[in-house]
Image 1 (cartoon, rainbow, N blue to C red):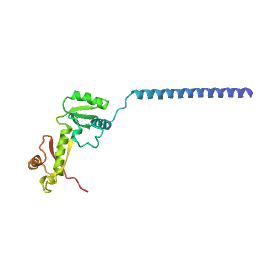
Image 2 (image 1 turned 45 degrees about the vertical axis):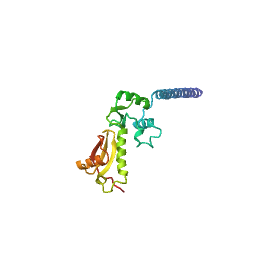
Image 3 (image 1 turned 90 degrees about the horizontal axis):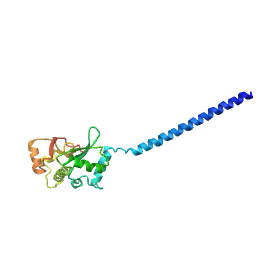
Image 4 (image 1 turned 120 degrees about the vertical axis):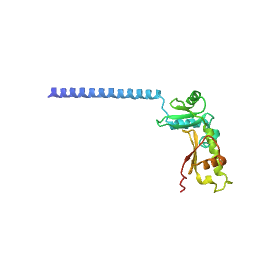
Length: 200
């Protein structure tokens, strides 16, 4: 009986000893894996989202970019706009030397994980056209029954087209000529059919 108890005690001791040793080795390995993973992650730069890149780019134009977003002078002459393409890649449109601007933008953004496209017109030019449209719409001397007031459905700088899109309820030569005469005559403007916005 005493031999059996001693034997059972010895077996129990061995089981506990090996279980404890294995558990400590497992914890040590886990710790090594975590610290190795942390080290690998700290060496790998965090990839920024296209939205973060956009914010960083605009912030480089001025700290007050949110308040001045409609101000043409906020944007550098080379900047043609920015967008996210169908593949989810951040794209910056530039006028002039593509490679030169790519280097500058890489420094600003802190990454080269974006595309650069060359365009004809700058965003500043597009915003100046938008200013002319706004000036017409806000002009109190323009009669309410002016033909454009009933046909104008909106306008916006289309960065992907590199043009200012003017939406008209009726797109015909007469309306286009009237727009060019009374509002702005610019090669940046393209006309499209559009509906008047619903006023609630």
